[in-house]
Length: 167
Image 1: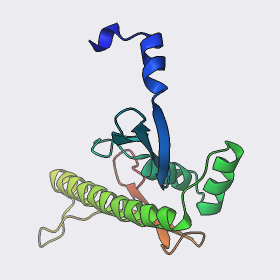
Image 2: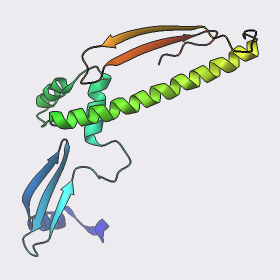
Image 3: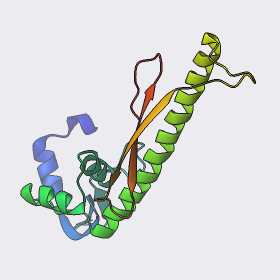
Image 4: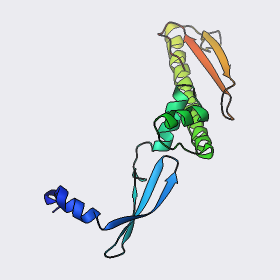
């Protein structure tokens, strides 16, 4: 039974394992171990590839993007922690995947805000002669030039008669 395995038992088992190789995919590392007694080999990974949670590569790139950094910032950060960083290719792949997801989410939020404002305008009677809701929208934007093949446009929409939402 697993619950009866003691440190001594585990230590005795581990003495028969030897490392064969290491496979890296960014921050996801797999170590191939082989039993000296029966030659059975197995790859032990740092994270479960079938896990529904965000993988280490995606989480690292998300964190760097959230603070406005890029690949060189991530490399420097991991260097300070003495952790090998992802390759630039892996960073760009994750960055593009995240940028696309964030854009989809932002558009959904904008559509939701417009729908809510439309309903509120109709309730208030703010419609023109053809029954089209009149919405007051103030848009402010900026352009980020420090992106990696993605030019971000940031829009702040101020909604009339509601608490402001920033998208």
